[in-house]
Length: 358
Image 1 (cartoon, rainbow, N blue to C red):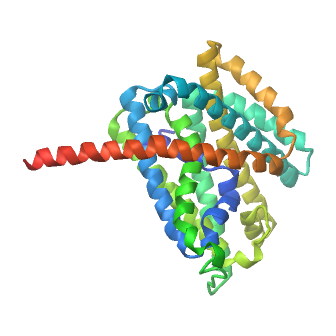
Image 2 (image 1 turned 180 degrees about the vertical axis):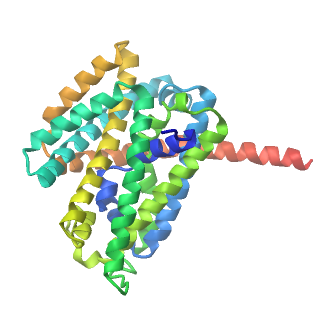
Image 3 (image 1 turned 180 degrees about the horizontal axis):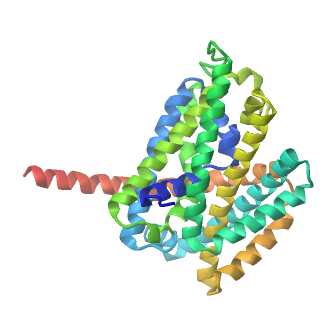
């Protein structure tokens, strides 16, 4: 089946951002739904920024003929700091992959009732088979899986809302202590997800034929993220009082529709983990392959095998370690790269506009 390049790029973008935290509803709950209806405005702001960020990264990737994220970051940080930053990013990608691997084991236990190791081994093999096919393989698998992910979230959320009859929001105004922080939270969420987006999109040169495609890939990627976010936020606002302390809110919401819906959403979570795992793994393996001058399949094999023992620490434990570190790193990246590039693009546009007027 033929897919337009911009659609491949937007699916690649969404796949790099949407992970287990997003699809489970936990991230959406913490960053948006906890603020009530203000969280909807926060989601709109975040996804608008995602449109801008994705477009900037893809356009710069095309213009600079980038092969990896260092092409984008090096001019900003310089040769000294780029080495430190690169170590941090590679560490983040490795641990992020381990988190998804651990999560896949937990989901396998829930769906199949099998040993956690089976889920981890299957995910490892599935990731390995994709990343050895370079960015084309990554783009193809995301193009197939992301539409299913979107459709499943929309259908389950819609059926859940319809089952209520009259819609009543149990958390319309949000938790009192958090109401004023919704704007900062929306910005933090974007910065939180900047690293995987930069790492994955900066390798997409082979599927970017021109600037227009790069722009459309970023814009439509942001639109898809907005649609998915809204279809998760609304059910969370409706059932908020029943979801406090629940680790996977959307799975509990899906469970209201019966076993089939619960199992279907478990599959959605698994797909979200898979798309994130292959994004992290690909970014790590490709860069290490370049640095060490070793064939990609060798690095991929070592990477996938070495991550298995760490993934057995458990999904929740790894999330508690990983996510705070990710937040601090991402804020630095967001400020130094995204905002700076956006300002430069705005200045260029303003100058061209003034010349056209003259």
